[in-house]
Length: 313
Image (cartoon, rainbow, N blue to C red; front, side, top):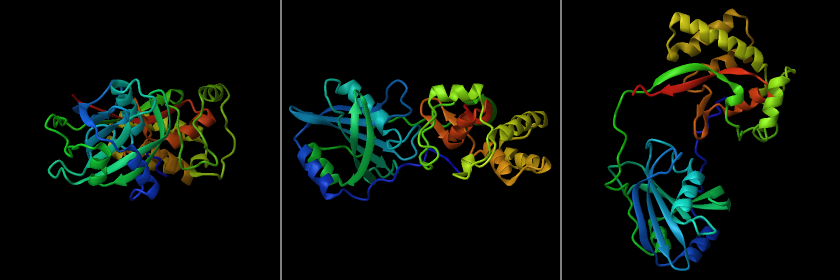
C-alpha cells in the first residue's frame, strides 16, 4: 500500500558491453576545472562534491560525490535536477549535459568504499536532462574516462548538518488542489499520468462520487467519505491532545466505532501513519503519498490530511 517516492531506482549491477563502448568513446585526457565540496544551487534539495573535468573538443565530465544518508535528496533521486544545475552553471554553452558520474560513499570513515555509477540520459531539453539510466563502473573505468585523478572522498570542505533537535511531526488539514502533480509509477493501467491542472479544477467543481473500482487499492473506495472522517478525527485528536505517533491507532479505533469497511479503515489509517501519510515536499513533489493524491484529485476531493516535519529551530 505504501506509495513512497523515496525508494531509489535499481541500477544495473555492472556496465554492459554497450556501456563500455560508450565509455571508451567518451575517454579523453581532461583537467580538473572545478572542485566544489559543497555544490548547490537555488531550489536544489541537497549538496554534493562536484569535480568537473574538461578538455578541448571533449564533453565535460562531472563527478558528483555524496555520503549515503547525507542531508537532502540523494544523488540518484535528484540526478536530473543536479545534472541540470551543473550544466547551467558550468557548461552553459554545451548542447548536451556533462557526462554524469555518481560516487555514493557508504561511510565517511571509509572513503574508498563507494559505488560508482555512470548515468546516461535518454534526452535533454535546455538544462533539463531526462530519462536517466544507471550502470555501475569501476574506479579504473572512471579514471580512464576522465584521464586524470579523481578524488574519492567527500572533501575537507564538506560541512555536515549540525546536530540539533529532531523535527516535530504535525498532521494538518490541506487543500488537495494545492498538492503537486503526481507521477504514479506502479499502477500504469489506471493511473498512467498525473492529473493536469484543468482536470483537477474541473473535479473540484464537479466531484466524482462513482462506485469503487477494482483496478487497484487506491481506487478501491470513496476518498470523499474517508477524508470527511479524517478531518473529524483530526479535530478530535487536537481536543484530546493525541500524539502524532499514536494517531494511526486512534484512527483505527475511530473507524471501528463508526462501522467503517476494511478499505475505509485502511485508507483512514494510512492518512495518519507517520511512515505512510501523504507528505508533500516543497521542491520535489512528494516524499510519500502521490498515488493517494492522484486518486483524490481524480475524485475531486477538496480537503485531506498531510504530514509535515516541523524544524523546532
